[in-house]
View (cartoon, rainbow, N blue to C red):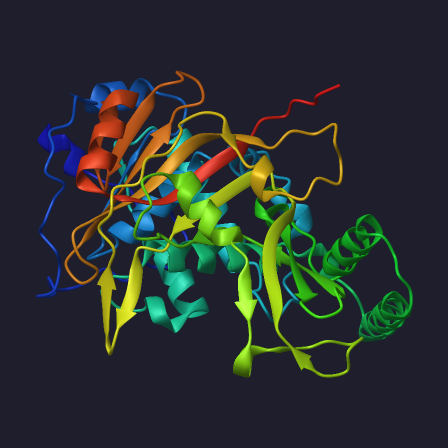
Length: 407
């Protein structure tokens, strides 16, 4: 790569705090493969679709990987770049950053898409995120999934229109919710009604571009083994965290495990409202509302006693037409449940000494691009599959819903 790629831009706003020394725990391990076609600085300057390297600020590859994937999320990026976010900023919401994160993220995207620089430094994003969540202060390595959750939560609260309510309005809504839930307990409403009511109650307090883009809903059903009584609850979801079973070879095996029936007995027995005693029961999860962007997180890290370890298993997955119909309760039979992959957050090595990169599909050229901090290269679909299967790096998958209705 040309040495000019080392040049960078820090977009103007909060004064950056650049580390003064190189911490001893910074990983120097790089992915063991050679990029197919490095992109030169001249090519970057000629691009007009946000293909820019990001400076590593000291173990911030986890952040760079996620920022590249989010930049490729067209609906979210367009929402910021066209200025619509300004009307939604909720500076009074104490659950967020008072709009600081939303404003910095907009400046970050503006720099990427308009300055045509080879490398941009996300210093200000790091600063605001660190103030929002102390876990990200300093230069330690972090989990890209934890950063993804943090930045989406922060942006959601900064742009949460549903929190622009007075205390009296909130009290009225909560009272109505309590009455609705009691009514649902007394009556045997169909699941379609319960699902819709649960979502309406959720967006009464949570309504933002993040909810509209990334959030869906899942249902949890308990069933008594004695009388057959069932109880279903609905909850929002931002991403699917799926386990990796010992015998898993592909993503569908992981999803099968996610919805696998759980048998509750002994100390975990269910207090059946009809039998009035604790009974053995089954519990099963299913998706009940699909988001536009489905985030799937493979649970590669786990605790082994006091230590955290990584599952290094090769998982195959489709780049196109991921079919979630088996894992979704169909409330609308005219809909289908398919997604195409457009971004991947990868993890190489171990948790303490690993490295994060990203593969992103360029919407304009329809080609895949590899991002390794400031280094950028074109990469083919076949090579992506070889790398992910042989090196077992796949960690978070970003999927775009295919808007096709079946009649």
